[in-house]
Length: 219
Ligand SMILES: [Fe+2]
View (cartoon, rainbow, N blue to C red):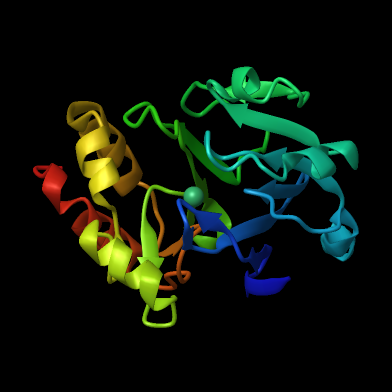
């Protein structure tokens, strides 16, 4: 685990998606009510025991659910976006997060369940104390350290370099709904963005998000 900010730790692991090495990142937030594991990777749950009391594990969208099972088996409450319990009927979820602002994680978290991209139904989180926006696939941030095949493919998809969306979002999202969602997120107080794929963006997150969704303008 690597500490990013007070109460914010991350761990990364290799992950392939459609033949490309894109990596994946798990974030652990130490909240007043216990630890929230966001987008879990394949890791022994004991690894985070020194950070606090494990409480919740969140599958943040319809694609980031592969490693929820062992964390739930270790006693954490599993939460899901709309549609995931049907897709992963083998997992037992405590609930579905489908209403803005309604979640069990306490006042330190703002949560927006997005509806603009039916492939993901991403849950976007704000960790207020560290001014960190927590996303999975809403944006990527590949740098020159990514494998060249990943960089080349993402460049073709308009998803490289830097904090970007790809053509998948551009053509797959409902633009009108996405505009509403992005305007809500843009009003949140954050500077850092932690995403699942690519590098953590430490500063300038709000401007970078706006730039990544420039094709949606006017936001
Ligand atoms: Fe992803």
